[in-house]
Length: 247
Length: 155
Image (cartoon, rainbow over all chains, first blue to last red; front, top):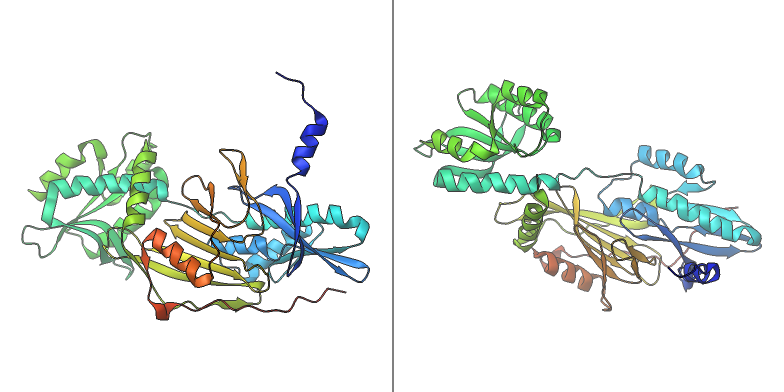
């Protein structure tokens, strides 16, 4: 391994900092990143002998781009977070004012506060479930054929409408014989239990089948919970069970 | 559960499926965001085989070059994103490289792919919708507002 050259490393890291003029002022790119890799830039504006350093609401724009609605409560919570960096959070913008000597440190503080804003809220993705959902759909297409209705709206006892992933119709294709949902992981159990409980009240005679992924470990309590409102079916034997239902 | 290959196939299938943008672009100013406007729309999958998605658009009100964001979110995940003139470098985590300027990001790794084209907002929206197979009618489009003034320096 060759010897490390501190000067060369410092020069390379400094090269990550770039600045250019925009309509907002001098925009400085800094080696600060949001989760996922989006970099952070901040803008410096001179006003007489004072300077304002701000993020042009870049952190807040990341939240909006993720579908996060910036209500007053969230705004106040983020303002408290930004204050821990010695900055202000006003109308979505992170900023601070300083003297010319303080500009470099102000840049770093605003950049990190802006990063904290953009990373403040994580959305819950259930994309990992999509693959298992698809697998269950394929099993049902192959086993019950034309009696399958996919993503059907069904109103529960509470009045809430559920988009049931799979509805198996009776032999006359006139009424539901079974509601079938995929349950890929334990996190999905409370949602499915609530759905089946509500459907059970409105459709007591329609079978409820919860096909779960038996290639992963499950806490027994999850299957017990599912069993109170449905018939838990291991995915590995789901095809046989669905054929039986459709017979 | 070995879900990654299955999930990738489902995401590819979702992207390829014909979709339609719902509603007319309606850029909303708000007291909690003074620098930019935002609009959000349902994206319906015409076959009904997949859940609907959301398209979130952002546009900076005062920055020149104009800064726009386009994000397609499905099942809580960012499936496709386009940052036009973001003004910040994107650092690609897996390759330890960086991309400046307009770039695309795709699920799952968010690695930035540069796009050197110079388009207006409608052109970028058309490009984004074309890549995600989302249809929209001309009368659904409305250009984002732009202001030429700056915020006052706080005293």
